[in-house]
Amino acid sequence: MNRILHFLILIVLLPLTGLAQEGIFRLTLAQTIEMASQQSPDALIARHKFRQSYWEYRTFKAQYMPRLTFTGTLPAYSNSLTKYTNQLGQTQYIKENNLQMVGGMALSKTIGLTGGEIYVSSRLERLDDFTDSTTTSYLSHPVTIGINQKIFGFNEHKWARKIDPIKYEEAKRTFLEDMENVALNASNYFFNLLISESKQRIAKMNVANYDTLYRIAKGRYNMGTISENELLQLELNLLRSKTELQSARIDVENNLFRLKSFLRIKGSDSISLVPPGEVPTFKVESKKAIELARSNRASSLGFERRLMEAQRDVYQARTDNRFSATLNAEYGLSRKAFDIDEAYKSPDQSTTASLGVVIPILDWGLARGRIKMAESKQELIQTSVEQERIDFDQEVFLQVVQFNMMSDQMDIAAKSDTIASKSFVVAKARYMIGKISVTDLNIAQKEKDDARNSYFSQLQTYWRNYFTLRKLTLFDFEKDKLLQFEPDDVL
Image (spheres, rainbow, N blue to C red):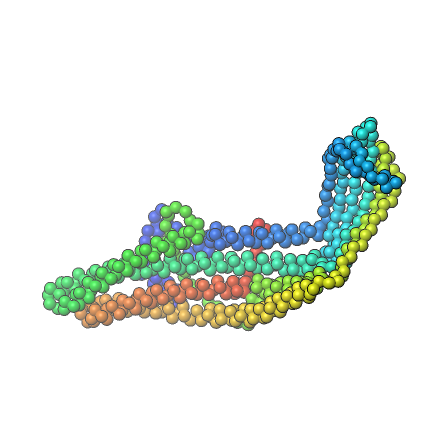
C-alpha cells in the first residue's frame, strides 16, 4: 500500500512533460526489456552463438546416419608410355592409349559403439583401348560389403556420443543465461536514464525554488530583516543549482544515447520513461535456489563436461601409445566382360582382408610423459571444479540474501522519499515566514534530493538482483516455473 501511495506521489511531483508530442517514445521497463531481447546487439550475439552450437550438434548427429555417395571418373584419358611387368618378371615400356570411365555408389555408416565403419557399394568400370584397334571391356562389382575397424585403439566416437549432447544442452542453458543478462543490461540502461532524468527534474525544481527564495530575500534584505551573508548564501545556492542543472542535462543526454544505442533506436526521436510501479514481493528460499541452480544452470553441465573431457584425454593418452590394430575386410562379386550385359551375369566372388598392427617398442618415455601430463591436467580440472562448485553455491546463496533484503529496503526508501518531500515543503514555508535559517532550508533540500535519488537507486538495485537471481537459477520465482525456450524460435 505504501508503494502504491508513493508511486501516486511520484506521478504528481514528477510530471513527465511533452508525452503527447510526436517523436517521443513512452517506454516502461517491461517494454524496454522486450525490445532489448529482440534487437539489442547482445541478444543478436546470443542467438548467433546458439545457432552455431545447434548446427554443431546437428553435424554430430549426422555423422551416425547412413551416407549415400557417388564417386566416378568421367573420363580418364591416357596416351603415353607406361611401365609394364609381364608374367616372366620382365619389365618394359609399352605404349598406352585408352579411355577409362568409372562410376559407383556407396552406402556407408559409422558405428559409434566401436568407432568402425561399414559400407555397401556397387561399381562399374569401362575401358576403351585404342592401341591397335578400338576394344571395349567392362569390369563390374555388383555388390561389395566391407568394414574398417580399429582394434584396441582410441574410439573418439564413443566419447563424442557422451560429450556432444552435454555440450548442446549446455549451449541451450547458456542462451537462456545470455538472454537474462540482456534483461539485466536493459534494466541498468533504463534506470540509469530514469535516475538522471529524476536528477534533472530535481535540479529544475531547485533552480525554481532558489530563484523564488532569492527574489524574496533581496526584498527582505532591502528592508533590513535578513543579513547580507544570508542573501549571499541564497545567491550561491541559486548559482550552484543552475550548475547542477547543466550537469544533469548532460547526464540525461549521455544515458539517453546509451539506451537508444543498446535498443538500436535510430533517429532523433526522444524517449520518455515510465517509472515502474509496484514491484513483485516474494521471498526465495536459499536451499531451493541452490538446488535449482545446480540442476538448471549451464555451469553445472560445464563441470560435468570438463571432468568427462579430462577423463577422455587420459584414456586417449593411454590407448594411443600401446598395441593397436586395424582390420579391413571386404567381400563382394565381380566380373569382366566385353559387353555390359555380360558383365553382370554369373559374377565371381572377391574377398580381401588385412590386419595392420602397431606395437610400440622403444619411445624413450614419450608415451609415459603424455600419460602423466594428461593425468596431471585431469587432477587440476578436478580441483578447479570442486572449488568452483563451492563458489557457485556461495554466489547463489548471497544473491538470495540480497534479494530477500530488498523488499524491506524498498519500503524504507519509499517512506523516506515521501517524508523528505513533505519535510522540504514545510521547511520552505517556514523559511519564507522567517521561522528557520537558510542553513536549515539547505539541509531539508539536500535530504529531499538524497531521498529521491536513493529511492530510484534502490529500485534499480531491486531489479538488478531480480534478474541476476533468474540468471543464476534459470527459474522464474514470481511465476514458479522454469525458464525455457523453443530452439526453432531462435533458428
